[in-house]
Length: 141
Image (cartoon, rainbow, N blue to C red; front, side):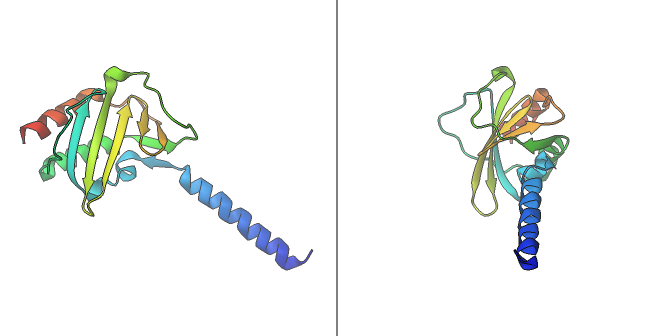
């Protein structure tokens, strides 16, 4: 085999390692949900909520507080397929409406964040009482 083949093989291996290193990196929860691009929010405490609701456009202080809350946690993507609730009394769902019109739904529970994939919270538990206060503030706006 030629030298070019080995160089190409090495480049491919480095690219694959870099891709998976980036994908499975530790990251800030606020960055994961792209809180800076959020325009509207809705929080549902527990594993049930209203059948219908409307996303709320929070004031800057509420967005800042949500960003601070999320920013204190570090998460890492897992290989876990699916998710089953182990702490339903400490669960909340966060609906985020983005500037571009996209809607994403995240389910949080003590030490896991579920979206399209599961993310392990590296510094659990999530402060359930703090998010309850944010939910009450959103409802009163």
